[in-house]
Image 1 (cartoon, each protein chain N blue to C red):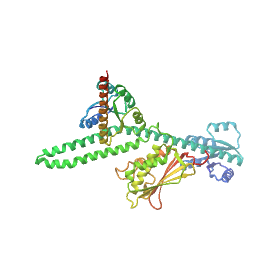
Image 2 (cartoon, each protein chain N blue to C red):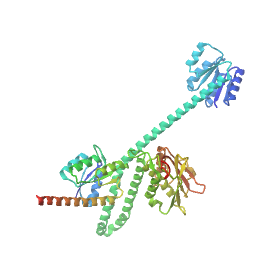
Image 3 (cartoon, rainbow over the protein chains, first blue to last red):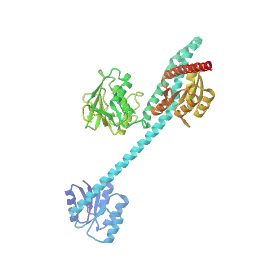
Image 4 (spheres, rainbow over the protein chains, first blue to last red):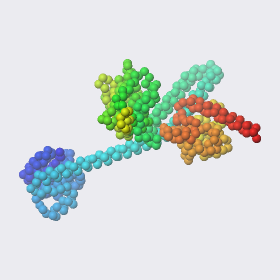
Length: 389
Length: 138
C-alpha cells in the first residue's frame, strides 16, 4: 500500500485517478492546485509518489517538478498529460521525472507503474538497512579493537600494582613485630591505629586491582586472536567445564542437567567461547538464587527444529527487574551491587553467541525466577550406534 | 641462586625483583631481550623469568636463544594475554611453567620458583657427577 498524492485542476481527472488507486488500497490525497500540494508537503510526512497534471494554471506540472527537485530530490513524481510534445517530455526528464502517463489514463498502466515503484522503494530500503547494519558492525569492531588494546595497556600497570601490594603485605608482616617491640608508650596508640588500618588499606587496593583484572579479562575476549579457535565445540564438555570452574560459587545450589537432545555433539562455537558463555550465564543464575530458600538451577538441552541446540539456564531466583529487561545486553549495564558485577557478562555472551550464528534470549518464568536461553546452530551429529553409516 | 628477569616494563622488573630478593635469590633484570641473551652468555643463568611478548623478540624466540646458550636453563614465562596459543608455543619449546599477569597467587609463583630451583640443583649435581666420571675414566 502506497501513499499517493495527485494534483490536477480538473476534478473529473482527479476522481478517475483516485478511484483507480483506491481499487488497489492505496491511500490517496487530492489537490486541485500545485500550490496547495506544496503547502501540504511542508507540514506532513512525505508521500511515496506524486502524480501531477502537466497543464495547470498558476504553477504548472513542470514548475511543480522543478520546485520538488530542489527540496525533495528523492520524491518520485509522475507526469500525467495528454500532450505528446517532445520538448516538454525532454524538459521533464531533465528535471528528473519518475514516469509519464498518457491521458486518458489506463488503469493497468497506472497500477503497474505504482507496483514497479513499490518494488524499487522496498529495495532501496533494504539497501539502506544493510548499509546501516554494516556501519554498525564496523563501529562495534572498532570498539572491540579499542577495548582490547586498552585492556592490554591497563593490564601491565595493574600487574605491578597487584604485585607490589603483595610485597608490601609481606614486608608489613615482617616489620610489625619489630615495631611493636621497639615502640615506647607515646607511640603505642599510633601503632595500634596503624596496625588496624594498614591491612585494610592493602586489602582495599588489592580488591581494586582484582576488579580491574576482571574488567580487563572481559574486554580482551572481544578480539582474542582466533588462531586456535576451531569453528565448532562440544557444548556438553563446556557445560561440565563451566560447572567445575564455578564449583565454589555453585556451592549448595542444586544444579541439574536435563538432556533432551541425544546425538548432537558439536555446535558452531569454539569450546572456549561456549565455556565463557556458560560461565557467564551460570554465574548470573547463581547470583540470582543466592537468597532463595531452595536454590535450584536447571540446565535443559533441547533440539530446536533439528538445526539448533537450545541450552536453557532456568533458575528459581529473583527474576529480572521489569525496568532492566531491555538493557541487559548493554555493556557495563549491571543490576548487581557495586563491585559485584562488571556489566559485561551478558554483553560478551551476546557477542559470542552472535558470532556463532546463534541467539541469546531471556524471560521471567511464570512460577518465579528467570530463564536464559542460548540457541546455537548444530555443527555435527554423532552417528547413532547400530544405524547404517 | 641467580635468576634473570626479562620484561619490557621496568616497574614489573622492580616488583618481581623485590619478591625474589625477599626470598633470598640473587636477581638480575633487563627490559631488553637482546641484552638478556648477552647476559646469559656472561652468566649462564639457570633460571629465567620472562615476559612472553616484547619489542624486537617474542618469548618463543628468546626461549630458543637462551636455550642455545645454556641448554639446562629453566624458563618460566609470564603473559599479559588471555590467549593461550602463545603460552602453548612456549611450553612446547621447553618453558617449565607459565603465569598470567597480574600474578594473583604470588605464593604459588614463589613455590614454582622454589621447586624449579631444586630441579636446577639436581641437574647441576648430575652434571658434576657426570664430569667426575669422565675425569675418572680418562
